[in-house]
Length: 353
Image 1 (cartoon, one colour):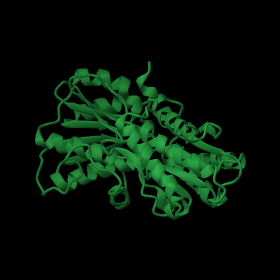
Image 2 (cartoon, rainbow, N blue to C red; image 1 turned 135 degrees about the vertical axis):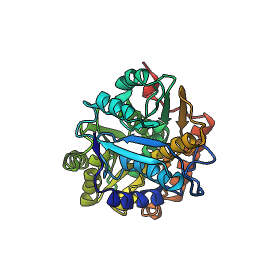
Image 3 (cartoon, rainbow, N blue to C red; image 1 turned 180 degrees about the vertical axis):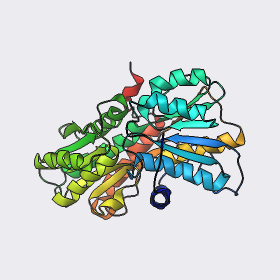
């Protein structure tokens, strides 16, 4: 197991991420991420970092942010675990953490669903949690985000922008793009929601799709995004972790727009990140540890975080809001309410066999 290096720098980055994301979303539970009285919780927590590693300014950093805040609020012992190959070493990482006597082992890596089922059976007295997929075992807490709902809103906004040449950076072609890290149901959940949102606004909007096959290669992300901008895309949504930093750089370089993911990434290229689709991994991880300390965290359960719960949503767009007509923003809010009410059903590709 590899423990994260340069933790003080990461904590500084994470403080910025939490501050950026604090306003737009609320927790699904009354206590999650709320100010807490300093307390000593004699629990040990392992956090297994997913592909892309810490420093991605996105998914992994958000998860670590929630865990770090829990350390500050509750006094738990935390060990972040990184690996050069979190997919191939999945079973070893999980098994080593369980053997080390942690009270809770949280994995941020989606592909661990298969080895986790085996490891959890061998360590019935250890609580495990996995994000983004459901694993049904009596000592596993599954955390599911409804990323398709938030991505629908991102796609709808992108479609409005691409067909309005009065908005700086929009050309006459109705083309937008999306770049995923890998071809998988977990990533396609974002992509399909984005496409559905765009086509809800205008069925003639073309949505380019590509996969970087990596979550830690900004150069690859930039290459793919530049190709999309050359094809006429005005907006490209990044769902590729650290690779997405290159997508955002390409948007800035060409005078177009990127859409950030997981964390509020609007600040990375002010005026060129149209919005960010927030996925409040920090809230989920914090809430898991909070309930562990309170003795209310129970295995064999699944927790959902969607638009209704404040677990996903769009950033406040503080660098681009002035560029977007008010009626577009009002329409996005109307769509959000319709999804929450059930009037609009967004496809969840992970819910199908």
